[in-house]
Length: 279
Length: 235
Image 1 (spheres, rainbow over the protein chains, first blue to last red):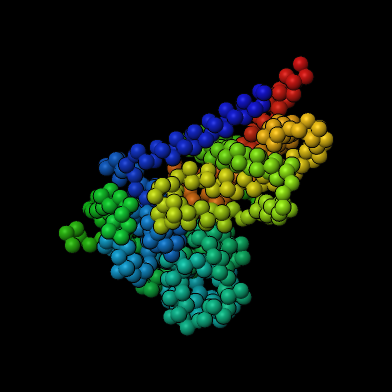
Image 2 (cartoon, rainbow over the protein chains, first blue to last red):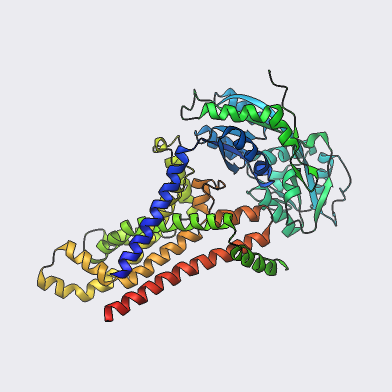
């Protein structure tokens, strides 16, 4: 009998604690933010959220997925605030009634990383489309997100500008990983491939192997982040009041200063650029 | 690669220092997976046993179905449970998505077919031995079920452990329905996936070592309980 009773006690305790943890969430003031891997993996949220929570008492839970999936999750009603980086999609989200209003929050930039041996000879340049064209012509391996994320969309735009049809090359030198930024960089490290990444993920990425930043500084590598409160008229379960507090804080002087204050090894990774409040 | 050595050292220091974040994540992993296995056993053991000793038309089809369901990829189950629990889904009003409860549900769905299929196998062979006795004494089915489950308990504990192994090791389902939210739904496997995506392979591997130790601990604890129970039975 000992076996059974002990096992039962153990599992019952486990069940209760799991449910207790679930119940705890409902009582606390909290919001759910659908965001991207670049903001979460770089440590930006670990820097920002404690400041916000301390001031307002609102806990912020972050689900970090690709921009495409984040928007889809928010459309399903599984999020109060959306913080992503694909302006056209964000505007479509608001236009379809899912979002209240879109605000610019901050920007940083994409960079092209690649092996130091640099078979396509693109190092040192600042012409992103030209560099991609050279990579295609050299047939050098390129690791793409291939996951409908904000970074993937930015990358496809650059290929279009370079006049390269990557769909045709998929599986040869152009390799779509179908995964997040970090995983894609792991793949690039493993096969000495080129890749497009946001600067924040790169700065905090530890498995760089032989990769380095080769191309940066092109205006077309600009990466804008926006924040949107999910529309409570469309999705009644949205915690609109609490979500609004978070959106307001992010674009306030205080929130913007907090974003500017986030550094990795002394390097600023996100540049606040919300319009002055009152707009 | 120097990562292996670094990972061992890191795992040891994380455990030795009782890193509070790590302890929280281990606790959540155990709570979720043990909870899921408890649910899976409550449903799967009687279900598997019933299929094991009763005769009905379509029984073979049920067995094939149970065996096939063992191979369901966790990410597919994650997706199904996500679609059920999402605010846009039929059970959205419960507000369970991105909570540990959702993770328990997903893992329970994942593990129940495994528990049922293995329990069916165990009980079926046992039922063959008991068949004559049951028939001569005209034992009602409820008593048969209870007897078979109780007498097969030592093999069925292994079935439970197999279920626990599958639950604690999977990442595909919990990362979709839990969302890997820090301090809320982050468990060992999703933390490993996160550190891998940050390129911190040493830390990811260290967490992997810790996860193996946790699984070892649970299996060891169950084994100890079994030995004690056997001794008590003999004494």
